Length: 214
Image 1: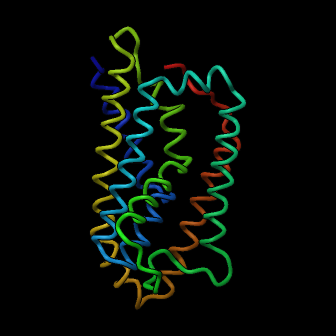
Image 2: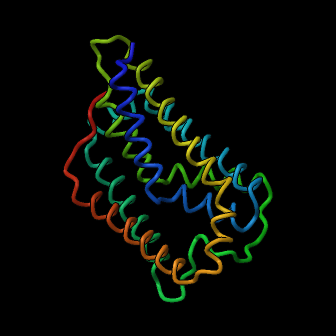
């Protein structure tokens, strides 16, 4: 049985992560603003599938693999940091466009929206580090099946993330319309997002923690 404190702990971590701008948020907001709420919700289904992949891997003991092969974990963090730096540059580069700016993009069919949501989540370094390094720390082998505890904790994270992301999808269009008449706010939003993504990348590069065995 999972300790209630562990459930609350992983829920708090999940809430903090989902409220921090990252690849999932950027993709869902951009699709919701440019193609509508339905497209955003279809994309969210792909993101949910990505969470399912990570949950299955965590239940199967993914962290143990990275404990056995530390170099693989290092490569994961470096790749994640590079991805975040790329997104940060896209946000602040000269001529860049805010993710909340209404603009024309090619209309993607539902299958592509789902696939892109899935791929975006699978490549999201925040989620990878969460499942590889953080989630195992809330598992207590003395309380029973490690796999079952991982399943419950992962399901808690997914419930929190999907609830918040669904709200983001629903209100993204309204927020974009509000900011459309306020270009200075849009510029400020670009720099805030870029700064947060850059800070996350630096944190990944300087973090010396190691995955805990599941």
